[in-house]
Image (cartoon, rainbow, N blue to C red; front, side, top):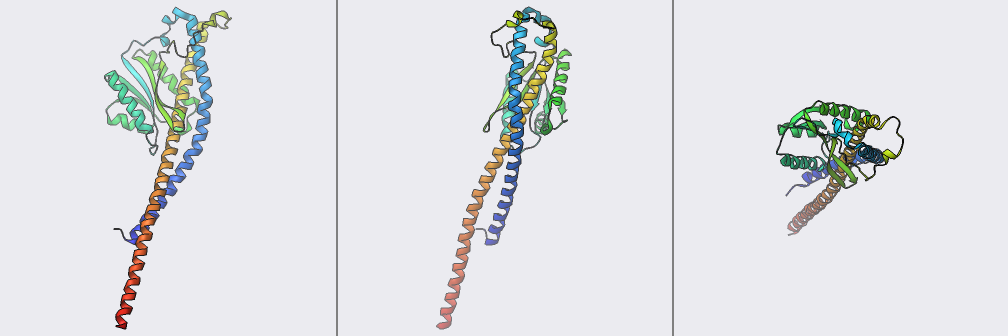
Length: 290
């Protein structure tokens, strides 16, 4: 059994760890609130632009056959933009995403898949498994992600798709549903899915469009890709901080419980030592009287 000095040291160590995890929980909570507001605010715009694109593409009908962004590319490769975290200590956030990736790769029979990665954890995971990484995106950091970063990623993926090497471009990210529910999600951004957000309406032909429908589509598709990528980045960062907050809270609670157990053992051990010392004193006194 551990000595009183060892127990005292362990109690102090657990207390120091609890202070660290509590501080990390507070930091994660603060950042979570900021990113959660941005992620929720971006959802209506992303949904509305998807519905508008669906209505306009439905109105164009067979004319979409001549538009490469609405048709599968001639290449055999698939580009995947994967969003992970830069740091650990965020529970099962990354492992769930990697499990979804492995399941998808098994279904694809590991064909020609090329990755564009946000987050060091994703880069390390793919590198260890020998998967092909086309680009590791490090600027700006995910904590400072803005629409310019999404615009750059959208431009890069769009140019790659139009190069003829790729069949499609997908995004693998973590959708934020609640404080305790974060779901790994696949999103196809190119070719644009004609039925995405389709409401069954095709009323675009009933209004006068200025400029013409084709020009509007050409301008709308790039903004649609940028918006969907931006929303995916925000949802992922929000999910990361929600997962880290929960993980640090669980760690703090576990440290509190462990500290209580160690203090109980310490108090019992200390009481046993005091009792033993008293018995030795009483025994010595009795021996002197005899």
